[in-house]
Structures are given as structure tokens and as C-alpha cells.
Amino acid sequence: MPLDDIVAACAALGADLDVRVRWHGEGLDRLLDAGHAELVNAIVGLLHRGGWTTAVEVTFNHFGERGAVDVLGWKAEFQALLIVEVKSVVPDSQAMLSAHDRTFRLGGVIAAERGWRPSVVGKLLVVGEGSTSRRRVRGLEAMFASAYPDRARGVEAWLARPLGPLAGLIFLSHAHRDGTRQATGVRRVARGVGPRLNRSPESPGDVSGWSRTSNRRPERVTCPVGRHMAASVAGTWGRMARATA
View: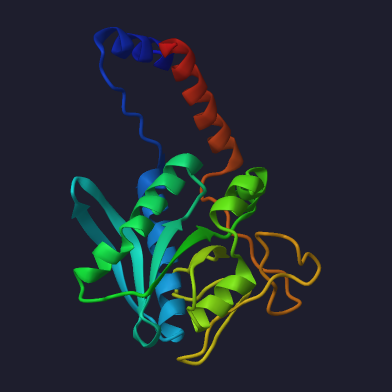
């Protein structure tokens, strides 16, 4: 039975159609979850090396406002709180910005539940390294620059000495299966020293740039779904949208 007919039948019945694509036995949602978990692990490691205490997947329910913080960072000597949102891909930007703003606004309440009394609160968006994510951020540069004006150098300085507010965006590589990370602008640092998040010298004004740590070109992070499969999925969603219009 053609997919278009199935979509039309579900629409007539007022039913939802759940189509799942599997890649080598794994659902795409699981692959995205794995990428998210690797990014969380990477940023937590980065914060720990900078002397931060962290908590992950911190849920909250404050007067009906519910949600979860991907990573909560605390630097006691500065009484600084960091609200980290992690995205393996750039999703619906408006929904993401709204959710991050809500957790940032409730940061003091969330921290108080752990006995933390912050005098300064910052927010950081961590996006998975990749040409598609960078292109999407550049495509909405004005919006992202307004919401996250602090980039590599500003984030580096704030993580070392969190004085004043922070609204930052950085790109971070996914970890490999063996636990190592791909080459990015993040240099390994000793505990207690802020991470190095430098912009590339050839594009100092690039709001999304990281510098390379060597002359070797960093390995590109790619989606495990090939281009032909992605095009097929996109075509399917298009047919579904036309059938239900």
C-alpha cells in the first residue's frame, strides 16, 4: 500500500502516523541521543578541567514551569552558576531559545535546590561541530548573535573568571567511540585553568569560529545517514505534508 494512501487514511481517521527510519539496526532517535550524550560528556569534561562542579539532566518544576537543564555548572569561589543547553544538531531555533531562556530565568531557583546561592548566572549553548550546524547558525546570524553574543574568546575568559553575565555559544566535537575527541579549538588544560576556545586567526570576526590546534585539518563530523537516504526521508515528509494539507 503506497505511503500516500496510508497518510490519507490516517488523516481521515484523525490518527497519528509514526514512521521510523532505522540505520544498521538503530533508530535515528537513538543515534541523535547518542550524539547528545557524547556532547554532554565532552562539555562536562571541559568544565571539570576548569574547576567547575557539574550536574547533568537536572529537572525542575516551579509553579507549573517544568523542564530539564542538560548541564548545570557551579564555581563556588565565584558563586557562579552556568546553565548549559546541549544540541547535537541545530533544531527549531525559536523553541530552543525559549526553553534556554526559561531555564536561565529560573537558574537561581534551580540552584537553590542544591544549596547553591549564585551571585552571577551565565548561559551557554553547546552545538555539535559540523558544517550543517555552522551553516544554520550563519543563516540566522543576527538572531543567534543577539541571543548569544559571547563566542569563543568571551566564553574562555568567563569560564576561567566568571565575573558578570554570559550568553555564549560554542561548537564542540562529538567524542569518538573510544572516548577521544576530534580536533577542535579546545586545547587540553590543567585542572583549574580555563579551557582555550580561540577563534581562527583567518576569520577573527566569524561568530562561530574555533581555531585549529594544529595544521592538520580537523576531521569532519557527519551524520551516519547518507545523503541519498536523507533525501528520501525529506521526500517522504514532503508527500505526507501535501497529503494532509
